[in-house]
Length: 171
Image (cartoon, rainbow, N blue to C red; front, side, top):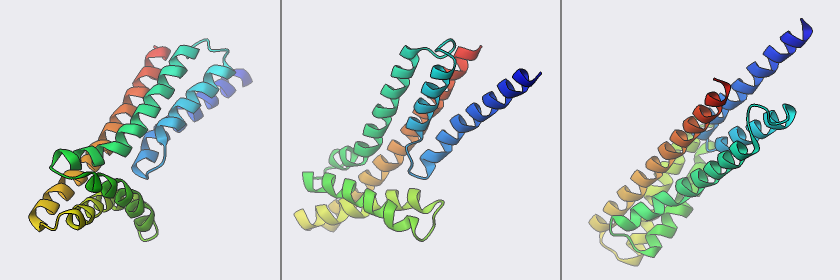
């Protein structure tokens, strides 16, 4: 009886942490690594009977890919919208600084909004300094904003796919 209760409690905590990993992404935290790390711990505790070592490696690979995509998509989208290398740097720097700055004002949603707005402002300002054309710089800033949103949505999608991968192992 105690073994069953302990097993059920352990599984409940396991799934709670996995779902929390997806939610953490909204706050700018590395939720995909939490998901992969939780799978690693579960695999280790169960001698990799359900979640295999290869699954864990794939999950960590997806986590790394998600971080890279999220980090760079705003910059590359700014470039795609006609921005210079300066705009790409501005999108990255602005996204980071915006997330840090806005977290102090709105701890829950500020990180997300700050990263999006910071990407826009950073790309706009750096592009305007590089080539003082307001309409062009606004277009580039818009591209950085869209890229930042796309990067976050991509990372959330990857996290949900990671959960699905783990769920399939239990079926």
